[in-house]
Structure formats: structure tokens, C-alpha cells
Image (tube, rainbow, N blue to C red; front, side, top):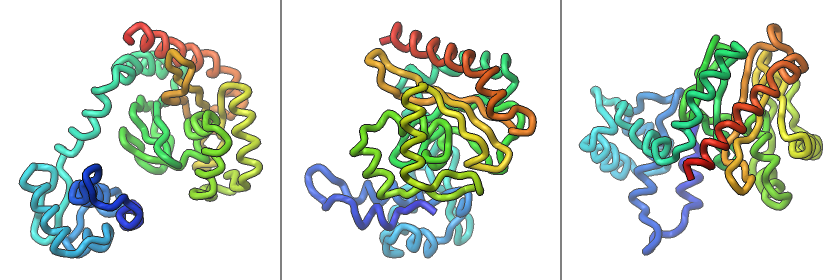
Length: 266
């Protein structure tokens, strides 16, 4: 469940630079997820920490704007909410440039390919070109996964300076997703240092049993990692060592091509 109650409690105080009602509206939107796609007014209030009256005003406002629909006592998001995410995607030329390159990579390697950015302790998927269904959960644009146990997440976490990384891991300790997940902070930091040195990351069944993923960074003109791109598949079909041997050069070439196109666009 989104930690909206905590975020509201720790948010800045209202003032010239902070609009509390807007923050509460975003909290209401974020309260809807795969586990709660339909909610009653009471449930929205409980998940956001708002009063029933406050939640009702926001829900009715969102309904009037077309972002929420009601059916009986239940409320749910409408497809129009995707406009908010697509505004982000369309504001950056990277994603328009990356998609055809990723599609060609998927055609070549016959494995799924995704791109993600780092948002706090999570990665957020911004592009995905699937082949077979390889995960038990549905992954699409906007999906969030813990950065610490994903290849794209580790690729991006490896770019953080030591102080920022220590602070993030203190506030968001790694959690076990499988028996293989690295949860020891010292071991995770050592792995991130290795990722930083070699320039790529492979994660073998730490997010989900049977899932292996290989990732590299997409870098801007200054060499900063602005996103990560991966190929992922079933460990039974493509073990981690095989994935690195067969796919790493093609993945690196695709990331370099996207970066070059982005530089030319800038």
C-alpha cells in the first residue's frame, strides 16, 4: 500500500511554496493500486490519513475533472489518469528515441527489455518491450519495484555517492523477496561497488524465483546515468552466466546508441 499517510505527516507545512490541498489530491490518487483498484470513501480516508470530508471533496473534484469515476459506494481511477504519466514521458526525448532501439534488441535476443529510472528506493518503469510473460506480477509503464534487488535498481544505486547511498539504505533497508535476495547492507554495498567498477549488473533470482536480469546505464553527455535498461528472462532458459556472455555486448551497444541519439537531440 502506498505510504501516503506517512508522506502527509512528514510533508512540509503549508506556505507560499507548498500547497497542502494539491498534496492531498496526489495522495488520494496514489492510494489506488493493484490491491485497491476500487475503494469506498472510508477506505480512501483510511489509506491517506484524511478525514472523510476531506477525502470526499478531493474525490468529487477528481471525478469532475474526469480522473475518477464512482459506481455506487466505490470510486476508481479512469484511463485519463494516464495523461499525467504520459506528460512526463513525452516531455523527455529519451523515451521516444529508446523504444525502437529496445524493440530491435528484443527481436535480436528474444528476451524482454525494459527501461527504468530511480525514484527514492524504487525503480519506476518508463518503457517496456515484453516477449514472454516472465514474472508472476504484471509489469508496465509506471510500475515500481525495490531498487536494491533489481538489476536496473542496482545499476542506478551504484551511481549514488556514499553518503546518499548510506542514507537511503538506512531509511529503506533491503527486504528479502526470495531466499537469494541480498539483505545484508555491507554485502549489498560491496555488490554495488562491483557494479560501479564493471559498468553492468546481473541479478539472479533475487527479485523473483526463476527470474534473471542484466542491466546497464543510459548516460547523458556528462556521463551521468539518467536511466537503466535491462534484458530479463527465465533462469531455466537463460542462466545468468549465459545471459552475460550472450547479451551484454548487445545491451551495451543498444544503450550507447540511445545515448548517442540523445546527445544529438540535445
